[in-house]
Image 1: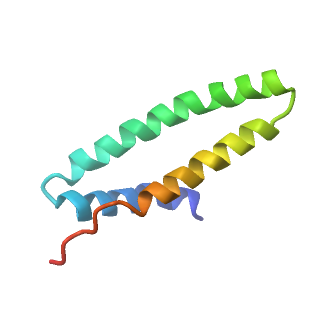
Image 2 (image 1 turned 180 degrees about the vertical axis):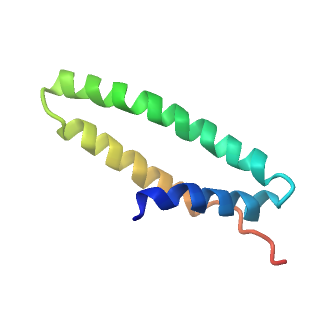
Length: 82
């Protein structure tokens, strides 16, 4: 349930942060970096698994990057009240 809610949450957040006129551009910006992560992630995870002979390091890196993203999300600008 949570994995497929991400596009909806990102669309709403983009609209809240940049307004309805620029929401499509904001969502496109988010989607660009989401796509970059999806293309680099498996290659990096596979490389780390090959080097360490285990997926443990790959999972630790993924978890650490998720934690960094969560912490950075606290610094997002609050949307203005309408």
